[in-house]
Image (cartoon, rainbow, N blue to C red; front, side, top):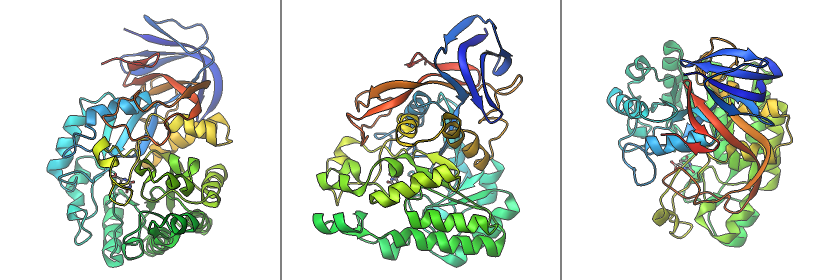
Length: 423
Ligand code: DOR
């Protein structure tokens, strides 16, 4: 059965044109005027884009299924327009060997989006010895990270880089120097002083960014920086790129939307790692996206069940939901052309994850039908109860945003139609 997406503005890396898009048997089979198909998806007033790719999703399975499962996280993803996600390895057990990779990929086969997984850089994400990266790479893992932790030992990180270069995979770093961040629960600055909450200085992130740039230059291995949150980090990355060092960077939606002042509520829904920063950092993150020194918008979707987020601020775990609000926040908060936002959410992260050709477009005949259709003008109010996630920890409850996903197609299958999930 074929599907035609009718009357939308097709936006991909080749440009923009008004066209119908026909999908059949998992692939795009036609792009042009006045096309027909068995099922019609209305796209009038909408953008037809490559499905989004999230480089940074916590799916919680195995081990914390009360917060999320690969399947529920997958539904949150497609409701947010994502056709692919890269799962983070801080599960229980962690994704640090072939057996767990196989389990995650098998469960991912039942999710509505394509589920890729990262692998841990070190055994147990403990930062002591290298995980068996080759056996995970053999199963298709392209991105390795100890996310949730940074790799503290510079010598170990150097060896991981040398190994990764040989395997043709990419290392992604959660930049945080533990000895500087220890005991902190929010950004260290004026608000942490006022609130009496111990802080994490910007330098805890920036020093590891600097170190890994030096190691990348030294080893010749590319590094991807995860969820950068400070103006200093963005400036350091920009300078390194200008000097020809092969580094890429993502930022999370909350770091261009919220600031550390939100913690004045003492509500742990605003606790996240790296922490929300002051307005000047938020603005630098926005400028980094506009200037092209940041390659991708990631969600850092980090579900936590209500009982965990009802603890006092210093005891609650860090993390916030992100998959279902990412597009709207990017369109609402960033003063960027739509094509630029789409690139930051789709073909740019797809390239980092090594998924080009499968995800991220271009939308042309014979390409895989991974697509997202969204209305860039529709305004809506974020409702924590209206989510496919098992958790409710969105920091945007009650916020008015603009831009809403209408249909999502994964592998040719319409899994979200007129905002309704189609199991
Ligand atoms: O806020 C965060 N939550 N930052 C991380 O690095 C980990 C994540 C989680 O797993 O909850």
